[in-house]
Each structure stands twice: as structure tokens, then as C-alpha cells.
Length: 562
RNA sequence: UGGGGCGUAGCCAAGUGGUCUAAGGCACCGGUUUUUGAUACCGGCAUUUCGGAGGUUCGAAUCCUCCCGCCCCAGCCA
Image (cartoon, rainbow, N blue to C red; front, side, top):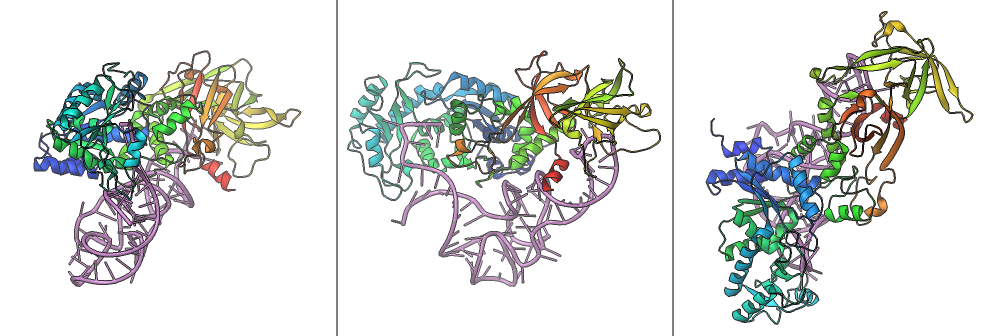
């Protein structure tokens, strides 16, 4: 194995400015090894925006032969839960990444973090403040005006130490005191105006339970946790750019074991959906969706339940790139990645979503044939299967028109079409009910066209999917559409703009027998319609399918254009 | 009248002074093949244009100046 230059590795890794920075650090020897980390707070489920960060962090580590840690940023017991820890672990793993033995929790470092806080106090770099939260805000100044020092800013070190120890000891109530870094109340960067390092929270922590009643803030815990783990490149989103001076200040003023560097990139935004934990929490808590794994949600668990393969998500993350542009990626880009992968891998099946009965008058009653159907034209190794055919079948309601235009290649009175893998049939009669709705089609078939080809060489333009009435299985199919109809889903009024048609449940669907024993996550293509996978609630008695994504439909597009 | 960022086609995004009369992908528009109106394939899609205006240079999307626009920050959230 020959050594590849770091710059080349950066290119192989997809090529972005973060990888370029790491490559330089490796080339210059500033980084002896590459260590990254994915640091979620366990206060919600992961979404595709996190996937971008996960792919970047794990991908960078892999590219440079380093490692990536999974570290929970569990510094706020008021918001964090074990359920979220478990789901995050499951989701990162499902996405295809492995942190090996490097599963960490910021809470594992609480004792060390506390020790460093005392060091800060001893060095005159931190003080205990008695001001209330409101008072601190008032003293902080505004974006254009400097703050004013707290009256407790110049407390004696010994008094600070004593107070801080008593904070830890539980002598004070929530909010009564905080530990603050002593930096610069006049800084243009508000994060440097004596940021809070520790606050008192008498609450049970998911992991440390009641061992602590003071908890470090993100700003204090994050960089030091990175340093403890030997993280070389601490990658985070743009909103933390302002925090970097504080990140660096703490590292410089503490005797930490390593010198991590923070780099920022733009978070992912997607059209037609929301991508922030706050908003997703609102949707879930408010009952606007069925849970964190609702297939309409851009959560990892929602995408998984919908049938989107992890590899499609990874491909998507690789294609959108990593920059500092505040970008909004079109949902169509994700759909494309999903379709592209599934086209190559998903077995083909036939299912009729909105059935219309067809009786083939010249086909013998009681006869059944087993016809050969190709499982995946993109993958010969997928083989073939048998599909039962009989006198009564169902086709898609929209595949018949009473008075079809010339360009309609499907069934109409007197028209001939092909039933996929079966026969050519010609419509002889269409039966209506009292309301004028078609209830049944009468057709004849050409026995010479078995399998779908006419020996006389005649062509038909249309090929329909179908299902044998006697052999089909009844199923429920759930169709999903954008959570938010407009592309621009930003704004706090998103709850008022939810797409009322984001979920359509079809109950009288009929699926071919081979679809009966499919398990969740096994995404298949329903020919001519889209990709579907069984929902976790599916049973052999009552199959339930989710539509992952539809097939492209140029006919529908043409229709819409008129 | 604070600080930190960002501005290349409808959407992402390469590009780091000459090989840019600006990659690639998505979307879109044509066409070919087709037992999925799918897929695949072919072609089109920023010809003084890279937020704008000046300037430096033989030469600028790439350097300088000014201007404009957008995003983030005043949690004891992360």
C-alpha cells in the first residue's frame, strides 16, 4: 500500500474546505492523527441535518485513517432523556457508522470539568455571581452597547472558591448563583461578556442521576470534552462561529491534555420541511404527526420507516457538499438519491392501489396460470417469480378512460393494451353504476400473446400492472406528500402551513401474493407507481405499506401542463 | 452607531491570477431505446458572465477599495 498525499485524500473524501483544512494539518504535522466527534444532545431524535454532520465527521476520520467518537453532550438534565440516547445510537449505527469503543458522554467528565473550574477561579479567571438571570441580561448590554460589570465581579478568590463549592454542595436554590468566566464585559462578541460556566439545576440527570446539582454549560463543557478525548478537529455549525473565541479562551486558560480546533460549516436546510429539533419537537409534542418516526418527518427514524435506505441518505450528504453558504437544498435532490438507489436494488412487484375490476370474457372460468415475471430488470441476479393470472383481475382505475384522448396509451373502449407479463386484452364494454362510476370492465384476451408479446408482431403502446382477483391480498397503503406544501418552510408560522394532504391512506388496495410476507425495511417497487415498504405495524393478515417515493411520472406532468 | 459570517445558473456546488469563451449534480426542456409513460442513453440549459461599482495587472470569479444584499449572536439551551 502506497501512501497517499493528504491533499489527495481530501479529494477522495468528496472534497470540501473542511477536508482541505484537515489535509493541511496532516501534511504540516500539526495533526499527528485525525480525531473527530459527533456530539448530539440527547434532547430529541436525529434528523437528516444531523446525517450531514455524521457523514462529515465519520467520513473525515475514515478518509485520514483516524477515528470518530460518538459523544453525547448531556449537560442539561432538564431536556435530556434516555429514550433520546437510545434512538441516537440506533440511528447513527443504522446510517452505517461505527464509533468502536469510543462512545462517550460529557457527563463522564463532570468531575474533571469541575476541577478545571476551580482552577479558573484560583487563576482569577472566573467568579461566582449572585445576580438573577434577569439582572445578568440587563448587565450584558446590547448588540451595540457594552455591558456593565456585575457587582460581584471582583470577589476574592477564596470567597469564590467557597461559594462555588457550596453551589456544588447543594446549599443554593436553582438560579441563585452561577459561575461566570471573567473575560470582557465590553467585547463586541457577546459570548465574551463573562459567559456563564455553571448553573444550579436540582434535577435528575439521565446518567449521573442526583450526583450533581450544578451543571456546566455547553460553552464550558464542549471544548474541554474535545480536549480530553484528543479531538483534533471539532466540527460544528455556523451559529457557533461566535463561540470560537470563547472555545479558544478556555482551552488556553486551562491545563487541558490537547489542543482541539473548532471549524464551522453550514447546517442543512431542506425545502418543504422543517429541520430543527425545536420545530420537530413541536410537531411531535403537538400531535401534528404520529411520532418521531412518522414517515413524513425528515428524522432518521422517519426516513427509515418510510423506506429510504441509509445508503441513499449518505449519497445525498455526499452530493450536497459542505460549505459555509446558508443553503436550502431542494427535497427533489433527496428524492433523486432515493430513486437512484432503489431503482438498482428494489425488487419489482405489482400492486393495484385503486382497483377496477376486469372480467376477461373469453378466458376459461376457474382456470389459473402461473406467469413468469422479472424481479428486477436492473439486476439479473434477482431472478424471476411466478404471478397468478385468472379470468377476473383488477387494474388501476386511472388506467381506464371512457373517452380517452389520442395520447392516452392505456385502456378505453375498443382499445388494446398489454397486461405486464401476461396477455394483450381489448376492452369490449364498460359497466357503470347508477352514479355513472365505472364498476367493471369487460375484455377479451388474445391467447397468442401469453407473456406479453404478439407473434404477429403487432405493438401496443400501453402496459398495465394488474393483480388476479382470486389471488390478490388486501392491503392498506399510505401515500405521503410534503409536510409543508410550499418550498419555503421557514418562519414560525409553519404549524399553520402544514400540508393537509401530507398523508393519504388507501384501504382497498390489492397486492400480488409474493408481497404477503415482506418485512419492514424491505423496500420494493410497485411497478409503474413507486417504491413502497411495509410499515412496522404490518401483519400477514393486514399488510400496511408506506410509499417511500413515487416513480417519476412524465404522463402526469404532461397532464398537468394541459 | 457592535461582533461574526456568507454572496458563482431555479436549487446545491467546483473554481485559490492565464488551460474559465466558468466543472459536476438536482430541476427543467427536447430526442432515442423500452413488456414499468420508469430506467438507461443523447442533446439543450451562466457565450464580455461569477451580488454591484471602481481599481491593480498584458491578463481577475480569483488581488485591492467602496457599496449592496442575506444569515447568526443580547438562554443560568445546544
